[in-house]
Image 1: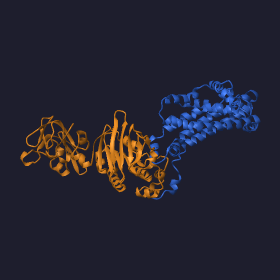
Image 2: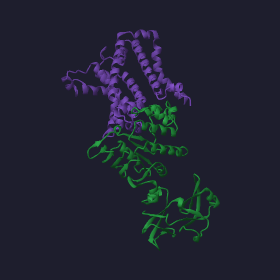
Image 3: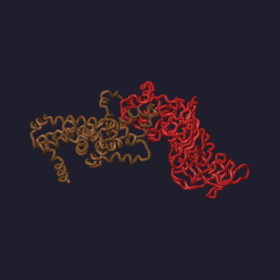
Length: 344
Length: 264
């Protein structure tokens, strides 16, 4: 398996993008917009020159600022899929796919991406999902050694998105190319990538498998970005092996993590139970937050509901049984072992 | 409102109608076979063709650089390119004499090279190119600026170098704007009068273009002047129609796809 190595500094308007990354499977960079995600792809593709750095593919030098090596984009074997797909408006679907073709039969790709019946269609007449398939086929036609995807799912509506996400995950697994994709959506990143990096203001905050980011978020930003509840409090060593955290609201929470001082308390919605009444003796969960019920949001077959400052995820059946839609007071409970502490 | 529109339209059309109304079509055509007319027509078309070829060959890359590169003094350069647009033709003529004339800035250099510009067809070409090129270049800059930079980037990452990207992506996408600019430039060059008469003079068969011949004949034979004016109206009108057709023509929509589209 080939490995793409990128290590560079690129000054942007209000911060410098500094990144060192090895890509051999699928890596997703996630972060808020303006974090420099697209610039990473552009540096690797050779569309922007960083002030310092190296880009290598298995020892093949694409960029080395110290040795004054910088291959032009057409000589770096990348397949870059742009966020808005950047299909050539003056060429048909076939013309687009054939544009960079290195002798590979175009029909084969048209069949593979189920766009053969659109071969003579102009890009302006395609739907979002079709455009994405054309863009992927076009990028693969030049037989790239590295695949770069810029927000591959952002231009799609919610309805087509889940299906396309599934297809894309299949495709990436099949291609087995070093792939770097950027997205602002953590769920997309987790679904598509083997490793996820959280990029904030040009710096990589954490890089690891999706499960690791959830299990051990390095800081408050990573935690909230991966979908966790984040509560602020002051930690002190408590009785036994537990740390006690006094929340701003005055309530105490407990965590198995060790920490002192100002901390972020991280708990994932699916680790939170909701009850109408609180019975301390019949529950192994040590942490209880009492609060007013907020509005309900349905996510697939589950329901997300706010209990005071905490978002909980419960089944639709539980939500009905507990009459959560009626509002009022409820208790959110979660275990001390599932309560992580991160620096703020 | 409609009255104002009618007045404006009438005002703009009346002189053109008058040209054709004054002389019968048969007589107009007969006048066109005079040597002074044919000489001028041939000279006009020849010098225009050479001047426009130069404008396109030099103006296109120049416009592309101005549109896509960021360098110090770029906005000044864009303004300077458009300067001849607002320059009175007489000033342009004086300027060309001061630059390329025997006693001009480059006159000595050209003399040493054995090149004599004044009073030759080369002078006509220079004058026409000078006054008409800004029409092409400014339109070309706008056309190139309108090409999505992501499409250029996409082409590069798909293995096409700068030249291939220019010819396969940039040029096809800017084509309509370039054609519109070139049509304007051609029309302006064909009607060029002031700078040409000052810089190249008005020698029949050598530097006398159609507009110069019209002016010349105007004092001698008004009917011939009218006939030549009608000729210029026809040529300019044909240009305008060609421009309209070019602008509406959509190369990206081949009609054949409806004939050969596979069933779905």
